[in-house]
Length: 362
Ligand SMILES: Cc1cc2nc3c(=O)[nH]c(=O)nc-3n(C[C@H](O)[C@H](O)[C@H](O)COP(=O)(O)O)c2cc1C
Image 1 (cartoon, helix red, strand yellow):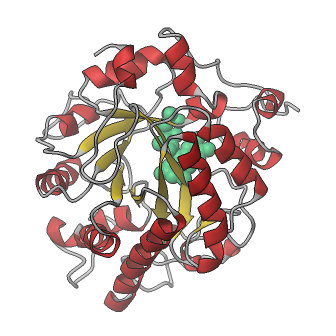
Image 2 (cartoon, protein in one colour):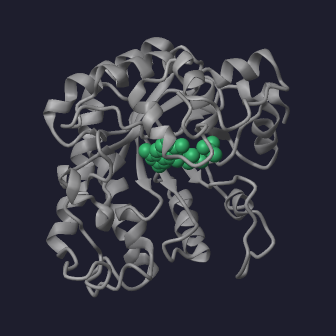
């Protein structure tokens, strides 16, 4: 597949088709208001993105419960007070011609009390002095994911992406290192995946047949086991429980270092699975037109753009204009980001990302 194929539409099992193969990855910019309502900075960022020709734009990770917060000034979707701002975001994205999804997030044991978070570990052993959440609390959080999806639908989003990556609650429950529960949410991999599956099925039931459901999965760290994640993914594909899998790799070329898939790319372990009507995309160092095109050849249906989209908001348009487009070299100056339209808050966030902003640059 060549770079021009990135501009072919992509149908999804539910709802409208993506106009092309570019999906904006979820990006927490920490520029919302302290109560999680969308700020003028969020709206301005979305306005820029809406003119950037993405097939689908995911919002930053949005808290499904106030206690599930991980970051200061994180976007929220846990209450109706978030609806007006979210509705404006969905409307702006739709008017620009992209599909939209809210990333649904609960930080689990990594919730930050400093910002009102209440750590919710799967196991008694994860955080000294804090007990594992009860079965009823798991069900409560599951229902909060579902209620948040309903809210996203009410706000006019085409769908949601369920955050199952990076050790946050659903990924935490998937991990045998972090989950030693004795109830139906612990033990076998089927049980550890139950939380995720119930969230996905619950959203489908609550939001109906036109709503799009994505699932973000990461493989590295947190004691996650590739073989198990592959097995669960195969099942999710086989039952067509989701519209798209968003494989969150830090490097889309990452090779498996041990176990039965040693030597293969992590991506190929998933692209080789029969996926029926489910679409598969990957994130991780996609910084050039050529790399994006190459991932289509490696079996992706779409690509997720993260840091390249912060450096240059209209990455898809850049690729369209120039099949040899490459992102600017990192690090960049704060002024470069400012001129590109990033708010001071977002620039501050990016200073926290190693090698992104020149240290001390104004
Ligand atoms: C500033 C920033 C914020 C991010 N916020 C989120 C987030 O809210 N949710 C999430 O799942 N991943 C988040 N990520 C990870 C990205 O979505 C992406 O998977 C990762 O950056 C790898 O892609 P890249 O190499 O193209 O940047 C974030 C990354 C960056 C740089």
